Amino acid sequence: MSEAEMAAPLEIRNSATGKIVPALGSFLMAAIFGFYLVKGLSMGAPGGGVFMVALLTLGFAGLGLFIARGAFDTRVQVVLDEKGFRDRRAGDVLVPWQKVESVRLAAGRGAAMLNFDLTEVPPDEIRYAPANLFGLLPFGRTTVHMEVSSLDMSGEDMIEAVRKFAPHVEVRR
Image (cartoon, rainbow, N blue to C red; front, side, top):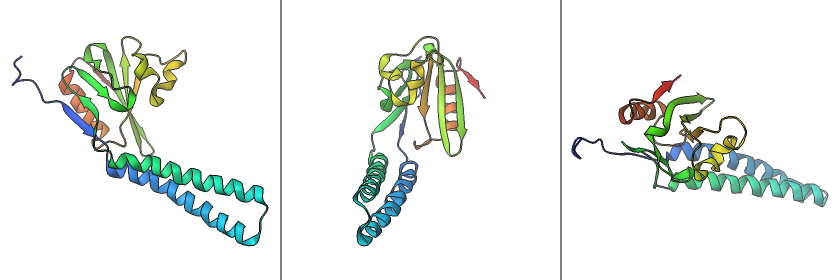
């Protein structure tokens, strides 16, 4: 196959709404706890309770900032091409299509994840990524999980891209 016939790599980035909307929940919780912090301080509540509410306020605000920062990260997060797939969020290691047996889209409650079943245990950089920590257990060691609900392409479109780049990979429902 000549270079002109090869399909261009599919570069997928973060979706701004996929990151901002979840962050709003954390900011809302920080505002609620902040209100009770100010109320507790003004009423002279005992220090231990006020301190705990202050920690919760700061924790939720920090979590919201951590989640929201991804909305402004315009770097490529996932690449699908004729060689395989690469997820920058999970070790940035190429997984060749020859090592992929099947792929399945797991979706529900506003979240979506692609589960790739491999023919062998994935590299440690992928296994120790937060989405793949179940791979450290005695079951599911050859499955790589890719969170897709925060990306700018839907899980269904990514499945179609897998079919295009790797027609031998079984798509499970």
